[in-house]
Image (cartoon, rainbow, N blue to C red; front, top):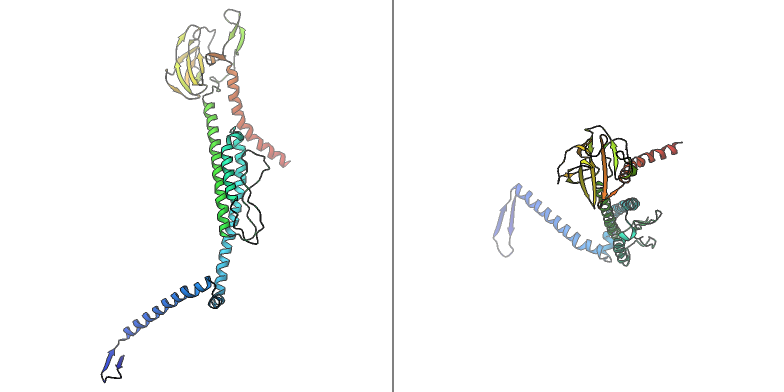
Amino acid sequence: MDILLTHGRSARTRSFHLEAWQIVLMSLLAFLLMLVLAGAVYHLIFMKAVRENWPVIGDLVRLIAKDEFAARDKFLRENLDAMAHKVGEMQAKMVKLDAVGSRVAGLAGLKPEDLKAMESAVAASASASAAEPLAQPASAPSRPASGTTSMIGAVSAQGGPYIPTDAPSFDFLNQLMDRMDEVADHRSDVFTLAESRLLEKKLEALVLPSSAPVIGPIGSGFGFRVDPLTGRSALHTGLDFPAHIGTPIRAAAGGVVISTLTVPSYGQMVEIDHGNRLITRYAHVSEALVAPGQLIKRGQLIAKVGNTGRSTGPHLHFEVLYDGVPQDPGRFLARGEKAEAGPQHAAVAPKAAKKRKTR
């Protein structure tokens, strides 16, 4: 292809020769340039006209792109509805957590005054949030979002953010999520405190001598009795567990061995310090399997039944001393039996309730 350029004032003519590929390349460049210019004009002029509501151009663009705007609005509305539904589900879960937290707090022995500081902090936060009204849609009824429900309160107490049935705004959902986040943090603090209290009780139970040292019946109980050697009334300061020589003796609770002495009245014995001024004594043993200073856990083998010291036959004499004063070991062992019976009763109760429902 030849192109001739002639100037009016000059008789000189210029000639250009273009190949086919050059013509195609120039056409593509021109087409791309037009696309860029069209996009720039659309975004810089027409979209600005729509956002700023220009009288003529804005109406014209909205009329042309009506379907596009409608599709975009529908997409946003569906997403907001889905978010509102999700927030509603989260609120339902928060109510369930509130009920569970109330029961757990009761089991942990938490009192209302224990949670007073946290409740006051959450109430102050809720008041600050309530001072700023939520950006609800115009069609939504005016209704305040409920505050935080107390963890230690009536079972029928209810609460939580208010979610209107109409399509909420994005800002409104964001504010609801922020409030629910504050409530969730409070629930987490309550559960952490309850866990701490339950752990304290578990640790106390581990060092409380509530496990029987020997499996079997009890011979002589704690209290006054006729002494088997003198025939006179005397105080029996522990429990006797008749058993064969060599029967395993296990620690009634965790602690530290403080002595493995042999004395005339008790024979060979083992003493364990459980802290809190509690000591257990295992007397008349044939063999001690632990050493002073050794750390012991509940149920650990510490000795074997014997017939040493002041004894009429093979048995274990078990004592519990508080601050050096003998206590009735039966009271401690009874607590252990109740603790073991508790979970079994809790497991049987739902089965019994289910049977009653099926009748």
